[in-house]
Image (cartoon, rainbow over all chains, first blue to last red; front, side):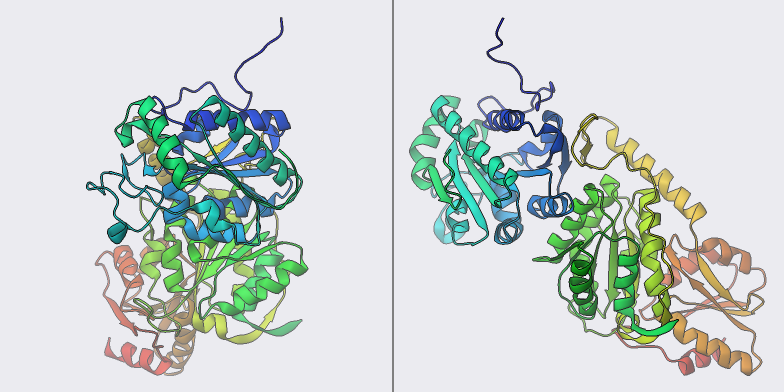
Length: 249
Length: 345
């Protein structure tokens, strides 16, 4: 009998602690599928963030280390420079990557570190239960913007991928989403390309994934998916933002 | 063959000879010569050198390089070492080896750029958050600056905890004759925790987050057991004039000042000696306890407002008088001042 669907070898059987409707589980799986397809599970080292994905090392079936909040790009740099033939990636949320860790993000990108960054943008701090993130949309109500994010008080949502475009060191920057089957498949292609770029030694790649956080957004799962499509995608348009490789997906 | 070498360069060369595979630094005076030295020598040796974007990034690069199995190090000076404390706590929690060098300058705040010993508490009392210790070694000569990285790397690997070389702007900046003796570069300790890809083995994880009921307490018990073992086995010191009635206690550059003071005092017929801790964590409390019955007084000399004197007091436990003399804010003690203090006892 032909097997049509199963658990990727790069995932463990540990049950996720993610909330219903959360995008993290989907992206974990996409990464696992890509690593399986590229045949690199035994030479991959992942870096788990601080945030909801802090337990990622329990879910992936390859070597994973923790990193302090915001520092995964620095930790990845240390690992990759010592072991340049291994596959090294960070998995980071918006608070980790674009607030506390923005300096590490920009400088790892600027050095053109040959690593892959998977950036989950759900516009909120999930683990700490719903504070404003650097990517929270204007008007968005969070536990620290109870009247909605107001630019005068809290600035503007940061477009991380666009921000990194000007850096010579970045090779591939793309933005996807996991709100629909179509987008999930496109996101997987972008993740696969990012890892392929690393494997061919072409340098820094980042894939930003717009993800939904129904409980902290105070929405039902269908409402949260609509919010991703209507609001998030307006602020953060999907697509390839930069591609220096000329490689097609 | 002896040659003239600067303290910072000697430390850098010692780390290279000890097999240091990765160095990550960030500019701050008075340790820039070390970063500059490594920027040239590490590339010559085809090893990893990065000038990081911050001290935070540098210590986390050390974290990563250590995870990947390299002998990894960073160096900085006092304000920069404050920034590294988060990373050091994580390394202690994750039981990662690694070397941090603190070329101390005057504080608090930006302070000044003169040599100082005011970061003793930060070094030996943990520094960052949580119940942990790092192994702290204190060189007192350019020769020791050269030889100490090897000792630091191997203790750090043996016990899987970060090691810190606590030196200062004077020792780092001064030149004196030294010999490039052969350095032991053999890696020590268990290596079955390194992340290098799970080929032919089960995947590994490195973490300090332990949320399961009782897991963090058990981890802390394990760490404390290790720290007690280090305390029992690794106290190092140098003792000059063990029959002395007045025993100076000083480390690093203040021990150098005290050498001169001891010689001068001995010429005057005074029975003065010097106990120089080489490890300040673990603090050499056993030798102090052994000296208590014969010593009439301890005189602790530091370039601080009085920090190591607390450890001496803890070891002496009120059985013998303990005096202190120090200069804070980047000022240096002179041998004449030490002699004067001896005269007051």
